[in-house]
Length: 164
Ligand code: PNS
Figure 1 (tube, helix red, strand yellow):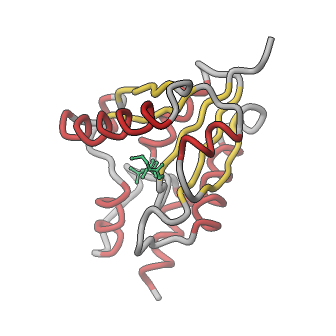
Figure 2 (spheres, protein in one colour):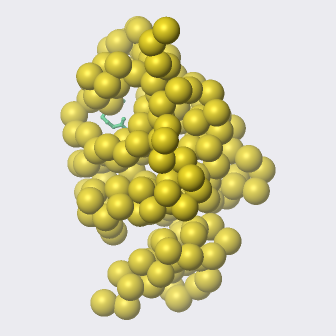
């Protein structure tokens, strides 16, 4: 039987506990999960794509997921990247109702572009409903504590970014 491969795409600027929760749960559903960093999605990303990938890889290793969870980056259309990687599904996390509209539109676009690739929405676990990279960066920039939202490693890298 062929492996069931899924893509978990995003900006991951930087990876949070919310992302990690989705990675672990999606990993339980598929044979292989590719966490795919969108190269040109965010104009002013804090971390470069290479740095974001490195941070994700460090989390994957720390959580012993490296046998089935891989990282990659992509530019261009997500469905093309998914097809190139023989993925059958795109995984997206949903935190709040406000996420839904944007995600549903993206599903509509992606499924029209390529009807063979399913979109799977995983609701964020309740402790991660308010976790967003955007807000974590703001907290870090203003000197607040980020350890409830990101790993020690990511918190340190955030500190370094804002120290310079
Ligand atoms: O973490 P984000 O920023 O919400 O991720 C958004 C992302 C990267 C999944 C989305 O912007 C995307 O898929 N970009 C690739 C371009 C694409 O395929 N666009 C068509 C779908 S509307």
